[in-house]
Length: 130
Image 1: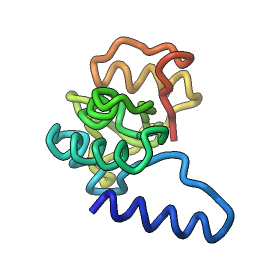
Image 2: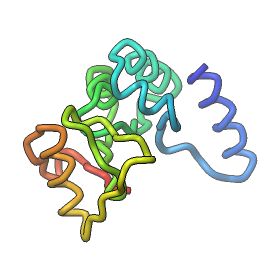
Image 3: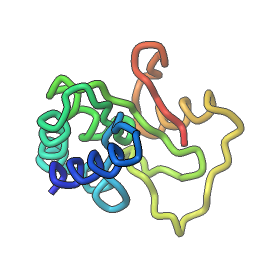
């Protein structure tokens, strides 16, 4: 399914003179792939098979960027400054209180602490804060 969706997106982008530069599952699939290594591996395989030059986005410290890196893809570790996190680093439901961060540095620290990760230097491991 992911490979099919990438192909369709590529067609739409090409028709408009654009290109696809990254892959990122949306919504529930994103959250499921963060927790499920087998699903994450399937998504990473589809992105790699479609175009191994694509950047794969995934929740910082989760199964998805790990699967992408294992496939040889460039990965972007993503954090959301307007969301709260569980102790295991997963996103809390949107219905929970939102957390306000003042900067991307605060966002990076928050994600690193919540996921119990060491802080990653942005120059070598991109951590994107949305």
